[in-house]
Length: 437
Image (cartoon, rainbow, N blue to C red):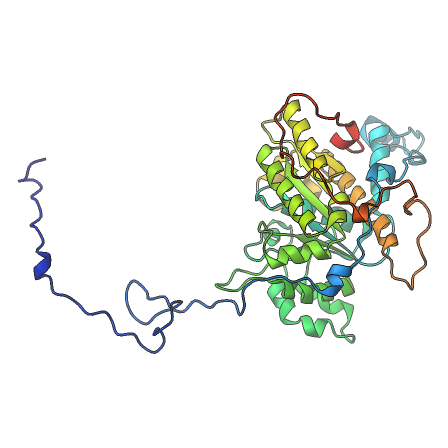
């Protein structure tokens, strides 16, 4: 390219450039570093900030709340004995029984018997109101999927009284993925009326205006649209929890990714059970182990030992050695209960989840997860029942041989998160790999 086609610009004489004085500060922007002056000029635009920084201090009630440890769930799950009394409904046997009009009464096979036992476990009774925290600080690990699946299964099996609550401080996606998006009420609307809803004279039906009833009879409390400088806080969660815990027996908290936020810490101190969805990947395992170490430093030992890890194999698969290393790291951090669910592209595509259209093996696997959660809640709820209720009896009592897990401190969480050595890993049982399969 020549100078003729693209002539050079003349040099600029900086000495000759006229100096301009800065724009005089008006009353709104003087001395205020937070005022934002638009690039186009004009009056400064203020961005509202929260009234106070987001800090968390647990209340005395939250610190002193009973957190009993329960036995490993393999020893507490209801027996499948007697579940084969009704004729088979699955597979060829189920088809033959239906086609014969009841003349044939072929018995169900083992997978159907186990599924019936899991459904019976989901329906078992517990004492008082229960709260499940679904947490994993790494994004994209299926927290919203796990919360919706647990809510759907508990809702279908137990009826009303199940609320899935998006406790994300901002930009929660629970409401987007639920099948029903009406009414449009969110956390912000419920918080605005929390004082009135908590009044003793308020009827139970008043809460339905703020929750989205799903086809599975679970209810959704969606996150509010993000506003500049306004995010959900622990005090907001306490106010909402007082309302929901009064009217509903089971709350499932879909938490955010920032475990330093007050909402996340409040959920950890409030939850009766922790469910951790994670992909069988090294990066996900590292983040989960860091979260468990953080909970350990907070003194929430039984939240770790009672926790349920829901493992999903990535579409690319995983080698056996890496699987063993991940499970070994989780055990080192206090995890005793794990269950594997299949990867489902319908759940992973980010769209609306229609529970009735999911694959049968997906629903069956998540029913086992819900059965483990219900069993843990039933066991721990009797150990932390209020003094005015009859004391628990039977298999949920700790025996003298059981270790005092409520005060047990982990001693191996400082080791390498994912050991690289080829040998020395303890053998993982089939129950840990695929609970109830």
